[in-house]
Amino acid sequence: MKTLKRGLVILISVVFAVNFSHSQDAPTMFVVHTDNVKFEKIPQYEQAAKSLKDNCEKHDIKGVNWTTISVEDGRYVYVSPIEKMADLDKNPMEPLFEKMGDAAGKLFEAMDQCYDSHSNAIVHYSPELSYNPEGYSVEGKNHREYHFLYYPPKNAKAMKEAMTKVKELFKSKGIKNGYDIYHSGFGSAESYYMVSIAGKDDVAIALGGKENDELFGDDKGDTFFNVIKLTSKYDQVEGDIRPDLSYNPSN
Image 1 (cartoon, rainbow, N blue to C red):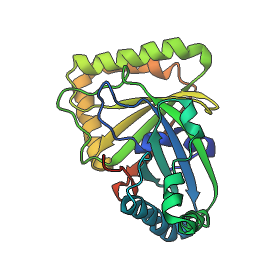
Image 2 (image 1 turned 90 degrees about the vertical axis):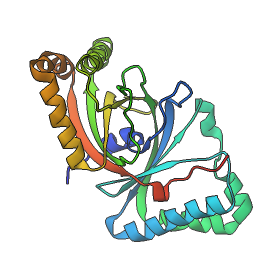
Image 3 (image 1 turned 30 degrees about the vertical axis):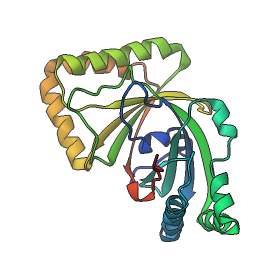
């Protein structure tokens, strides 16, 4: 298992969970809540998390939705789109408490017993840097591989230009596998870009990467190196989207 820095996961966990249609109306700002669950408490936690989803469906709770992902180190991440920072002042669970009363509080208390810390952060989706070729879809691909490229503020402009060149290379080579780019937001201690690659499993992602390398040929080196030389540090993590613990109310 890869060793994950506490700060890293707090800042980037949102990207594990997002799985939306990349239309012009798609959200680009997301708030993420992360619970750092103890390994021995995972069964108890998942039971409570499933009960939370089931009760939201039972009472048809509106105005709240989340996508859940479980990370290999025991973290559970809940991601919700927001339109503006003022949305953070709202209590999205208030309707559930109105429906369930004290029973809702007990649900959250059961989850709280399974971890000693949790956190919140905001990240932004970057459609102008993401590569989603015609016909590409993440449907049925709930495994994610995430590459985190940290950079100093002085390299911000050059880093964005270098990431743009990578997208242009993918387009010029007709690469069939897409990727999504996210950028650090409010609460981030460091600036970074995150590359999200989807697949049915880690083997499928690895095979896709091998196919891409064959298409790139010798053109890959300089383009990717221009990104690497601007990067102050790099991390890679993996996670799985959990539809069974996610909630999206009916319209």
